[in-house]
Length: 468
Ligand code: URP
Ligand code: ZN
Ligand code: ZN
Image 1 (cartoon, rainbow, N blue to C red):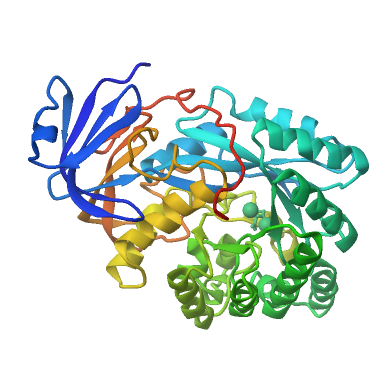
Image 2 (image 1 turned 180 degrees about the vertical axis):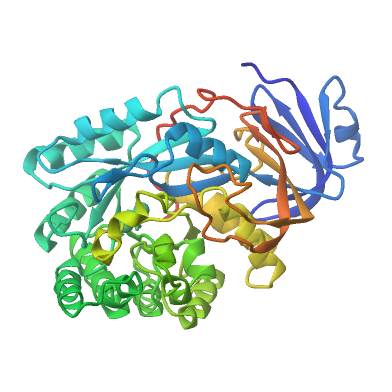
């Protein structure tokens, strides 16, 4: 569908670097110009569909660099398809996701990537790219990494957890890092000592500790910190940059901060669940804690201050969702009587922009930092900037008109993710997405979904530009 010439008038345009009362001109799906409201330039923009943003923010569409649509895990699949998950993302003001294609052991990277293209092709409401989960480092797989980087799959996730499934030992990690050092790819690390965790899992179960809260206890914060430290040292040896995913423990944050103090190219993301939820949720009675089982796990509330601080000081650069939803009925319930059988993952792709705006309201971060960690930094980190993540001439017209004063109560009754609970049920938030444009096409229009499956395009990505 071709997009009309559009002007967004009268809003406060907020990017990672600026806040300015300005009008935004959109032509052919791209930002054509941004000019001060009431300026002669802005007044000259006639012959265009006009969107009124008076009293609202005009911000870049969110970039969620960590999602798992239809991800196979623990004998089931994440409950959002690319169709339902990207539609929900649009509702929440996110206009680009980078999802994880999966190489299963014994398979080529190409086979895994092809399978993910087949799931997503023609289904997405917003634009998307792929990372690649590397589960099996072999000589042919290392060569394939070079090819994938050339094609725009420029980041590779490895797991120090989940022995027998996604796990890579230190030798495999080092070899992939060496390859990434040569081809410009970015290694993304799930940093938990999975071998030690599995021992603690067996000991807990043998002692009759089967409830969801034990998931948090066996995945000890020190085992996240130890793995983070080890990953950093392996990356140093390989001469490769490192991006640590879903950081939740303050001791892991300290490892990343220490590396960055040494000017090492080490980066980290955290997720809303670690900023707003805690082990109190994992301990909810009647197996309700299973809703909050994810890895790394939720931590005691005391860890949150270190995460917020790191987001302010740029020791953590990105907030992604790690959206990996499983319904409570029939999926999370697979782990009744054995927490280790609860599929790991939580929903959140629809909530991230609003939760981070709430962090602005509560004074944890500034408005510009909100846009930095949710839009600009992930776009830079994953080779999408400046096409995505900002509002500048030439960028894709992925734009959100955001009402900072609207009140909402988060609920599974009203969300659009294909999952039967909300991790934030009943939470009151100030601020709400009003209108969303994806490449100049309105996909959310003041509370109505106007997009369609197949509008979203696959975006081959460049190398990370965060280092620059
Ligand atoms: O619990 C989680 N995080 N599930 C998704 C897979 C992963 O490790 O990111
Ligand atoms: Zn992970
Ligand atoms: Zn994940």
